[in-house]
Length: 167
Image 1 (tube, rainbow, N blue to C red):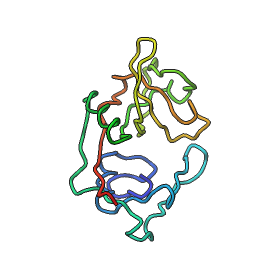
Image 2: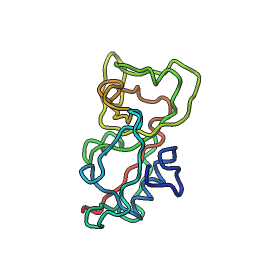
Image 3: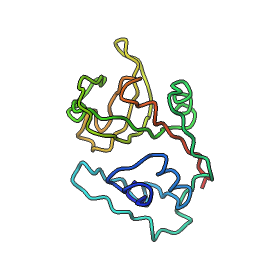
Image 4: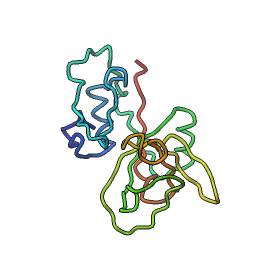
């Protein structure tokens, strides 16, 4: 997101689908080349891809961005077979104070949208949940992760996958 200032607004927000379309056109480098920095830790994100050699970049296959919205079994299968997926959800005022456990929304005050990475799923105490990686640093939630009850805040309605060119 920090590099895509065309259809998105860099780190000021945007849409996952457009971020992947950006990757189709401009490529993406690994964490080794362009390390992740958490914006919640007070650091500013600056796009550091522009001068990178194309041999260091991975490109999405043309028109390979697929919307997987609301297909819970398909989402699980994709995570199991290919790895994490990007998604977004509506953030409510009770979410930023999450510490641990399975997050179940209790607030009615929406704050905005947030993009995250689905990395797994589980079932505990009668609740199906997603295991999710957040971008707010390792001191937030469960060491930077959280468990999010399924079928709430639209988390299954923004899931996007993209196929890489394999570089």
